[in-house]
Amino acid sequence: MKLVEINASQTRYGMCAIRVKKVGCIIISNYLRMLLELKDGDIVSFLQDQSDTKNFYIKKSDTPGSKIRITNGRSCTTNNVNVSRYLLLYFAKGANSASCMGAKEPYEYNGEKIYPIITAKPYKLS
Image: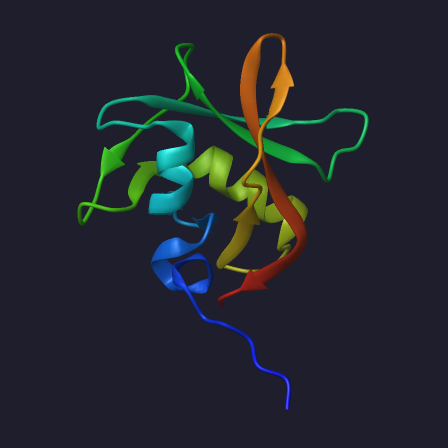
């Protein structure tokens, strides 16, 4: 027998995840929201590595980006059709919706914390 402990880090509310819908809705899990230190009205930006285009990142931003709304007291949402369709094109082509895990540890880039979006195995929802 091989037992695995189930705790909050493996459950829906404990995952560091991002869900993208073709209609423009981008949902950031509570865990990732806490890592990014996002509050209602904050701005997030999505970045793509131009030398390796399958690599995407998310960061809290003070430059033009997508405004965050806290939903249900846990996760947060932003709406941006262009960004969501662009993301889906790269990591879930043909899907209307997909979820990806986010890294729990940030990279330092130009003095800012950026969190990788793990696009290698997206969960295509439709």
